[in-house]
Length: 119
Image 1 (tube, rainbow, N blue to C red):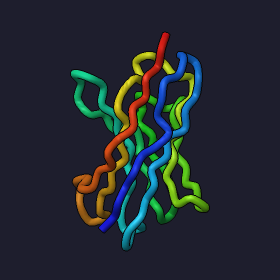
Image 2 (cartoon, one colour; image 1 turned 90 degrees about the vertical axis):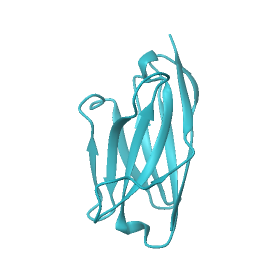
Image 3 (cartoon, rainbow, N blue to C red; image 1 turned 135 degrees about the horizontal axis):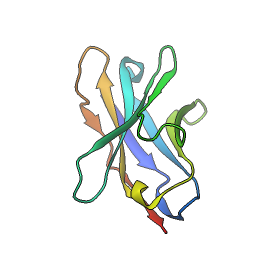
């Protein structure tokens, strides 16, 4: 079973940057896609991007492309979400999730980390 724990959230001023980390552990974690999502109060959960272990590729949602990027930290075994040029509308709880390669649903979710952007 794969376990996920997010970290790195906080309060930041608009225009700033944050780097969120998703610590991945457990068996066969390379058999899962790792996705990043966010959910703002009163809004639906939004996909922001994903990472595939093999071949190490990323996908970023069009809505955040250019400001968000995903990378792997091999030393820490984390999948990181870099957010630049933060906007107040980026305020949300950010989650990482794991999706088995053979399924269409994200099945395992981390507890989330809160990002608050002040104007």
